[in-house]
Amino acid sequence: MTRERCDAGKLEMIQQKARRTCAIRLFTCNSAHRCNLISLVRGPRYPWS
Image 1: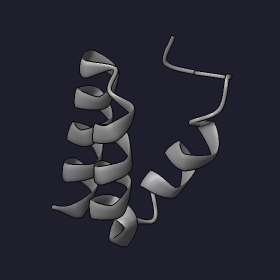
Image 2: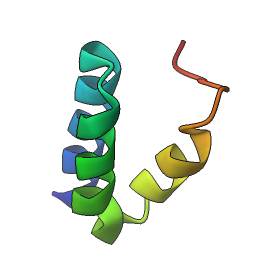
Image 3: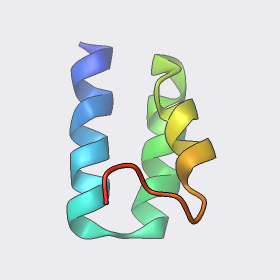
Image 4: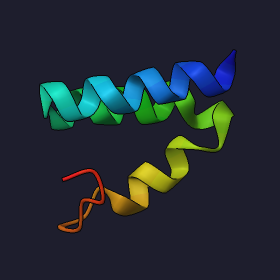
């Protein structure tokens, strides 16, 4: 269930394009270890774009 939650956060992050939401999601998905990748990608390079 942690994987799906992280995935949902990614989609919401991209759709909302909100940096604040991204930070909150990263902390919430910190347990999934998957959001960690988003933190690194949070830079100017966006693979989803």
